[in-house]
Amino acid sequence: LKQEEQQIEQIYQDIVQKTHQTDPSLEGMVRAELQKNLKSLKNIENRLIKAEKQKEAVRIDQIRSVKDKLFPGNSLQERTENLIYAYMLLGDGLIPELLRNLDPFSKEFAVLIHE
Image (cartoon, rainbow, N blue to C red; front, side):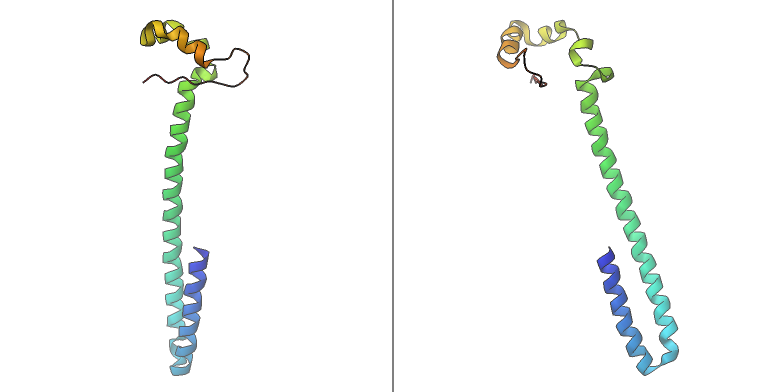
């Protein structure tokens, strides 16, 4: 909110100039109001930052959840999950599905989704 802060300061500078022409004794009051407004703006900025951090924390947790499912115990899923579980879900279609989608010589990960 730096740009907004600069705009507020500019507005108050204009007000200070007008106040100085009319009654110079009011200049202190105008500057005090400027500080109050800048403090309010800082509070708004802090709340915006806090809200953004909370949103990011949720996103990071979602990513970690997916990673934990794909890499249980920081290991490859096929090292911790038994093939029997996938066979129970897909039945006799499992082996043809694996043959269609997996290349044993590929160094890339493959994710098979069962709906």
